[in-house]
Length: 148
Image (cartoon, rainbow, N blue to C red):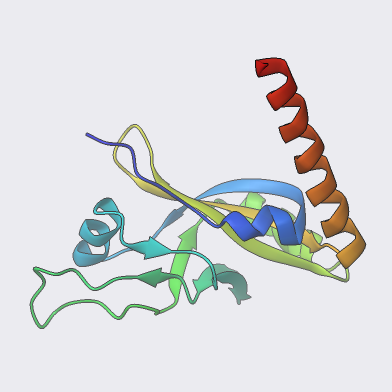
């Protein structure tokens, strides 16, 4: 079985990750089949609290090609599964100004369950982003010089 891993590549560029969590996600059958085929996207997704529950909004999962009229909605809100202690900790961190919850990786674990890695994050300023670009360029140059 091939490993499925869908990433939001812009997340680490746009945010400083404060804390990360691995959450389960409530899905229907056609959503699972579509994700295992690799047809999902996290670019516009974000998480929010509805009461004491954590939900992911705007995560795109393509309709399953072999699905019937019972196929899923592509951008519906999906419930995340975390224990109460983790939910309380995330809610406390969200009280700080400028914090957000960003989903950055969707994957299938070794038991076959689909998991979503989320991060409590703070947005980067433009000068922070420029610094990240400089660090990547320096690391790339060092790798090139070591290979020569």
